[in-house]
Image (cartoon, rainbow, N blue to C red; front, side, top):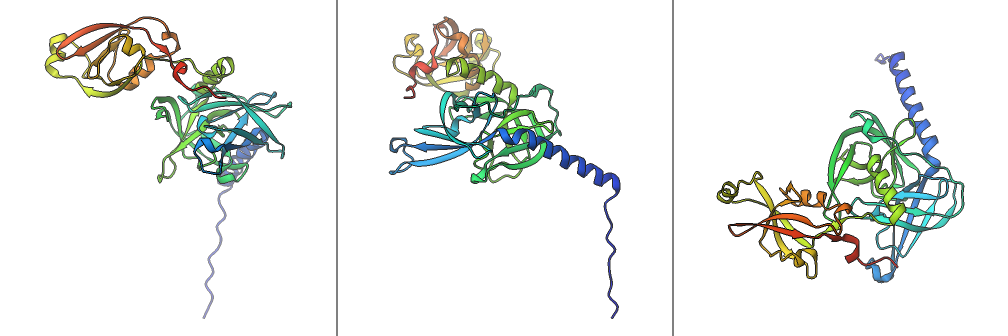
Length: 335
């Protein structure tokens, strides 16, 4: 019986050239960014509740200044009693926490020594959907791992551990796994366009990074203050539909508002005599259609400044003056 052979058809020269160009672009980006990527090991004390003997966790980060400043995720360094950093050249050193913002899941560390290799933050407003994206990090402890894909969407929102929405989120299909958190998402030119922060399980190709423009803003505040200035009024709230009859009666433009589910003792809301069951419909001239809108207006500029709030209590519409406080003043300080 004759042997049948199938000829091998090599890819057209143009396709091969494109693949080679793509490979060279990824390699070039890794050559630029790789030396600045760090593995972060976090040691927890017994009091952190990891285990009866203490425990370790970890993630990724990257140097963004030659004097040892590192960006990572807040959740990577949460409740750390000690933080150590492994650099790409094999150097291991202790790191200090410079600043932490759970509201955007970002943190800044500092290591001593230098100068270190570092990478710069790009302008994320110039990004385009479909653009090549490259992720670097240490998934499951596999140091200096690289994946690539494209930017799937821009301007997403993601809810953080504090309950606040994080705006300006990049969606990518560059594969991320536990341990990639805090690592850079970069362009083919080696500029950082995002900080890898989350995946959706068990979906495939749904990965998210905090856009570099937001990172730049938050990091500047962390370097200045160690935290991000936000205000609070001291209520637990939920989005509810406004009664149509009352909305028409009072000429309210929104269909929903924020129902006060609880009022913190000794809070600005308590001082303003807010009650459980009140419906917040306006704050400082802005319509409040939900808790996310309330979070957005409670920025650092509101601290200590009286604001007018419009509240539905029963069938009555009331004007309430409230003075937001500093959000960090009620949080335990890191020792």
